[in-house]
Length: 183
Image (cartoon, rainbow, N blue to C red; front, side, top):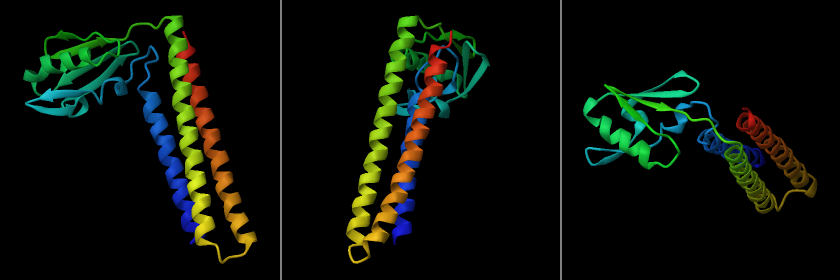
């Protein structure tokens, strides 16, 4: 029972890390990244569809995203959706493809994005600590008839997991901040 609780806590902490990575990948660093546009929803024949399901997204160089729609008739809707997303990108239709140049970030904007990344990482830490608290509560309730040594041992395992995953959050944030502040 106690191993199952620890595995569940670890699984939830991994989900928090994955969510953080996903959130940070959407923060623009001045470099082209498919995740900047892949989840933009496009009105495709009355249905909101993610761009990645409607087109191929390529990165021919670090400052350019190229979107090539599978259905050429959807090109104008894709362009409108990217413009309406308010992510600071200006798509340009070039025949059958859409070119999206990635503008350089100002120093002020880089610092703002660093703060956004810090906020995202703090939310991930809060989530991890919440998983720790839930795990310890589950241990306390399910192991009430066990010895206090067993309960303390499992709580210690959960705390070690928490420390490991908080460290991973700090490491991910550090990499993202370096990326953002790189000129």
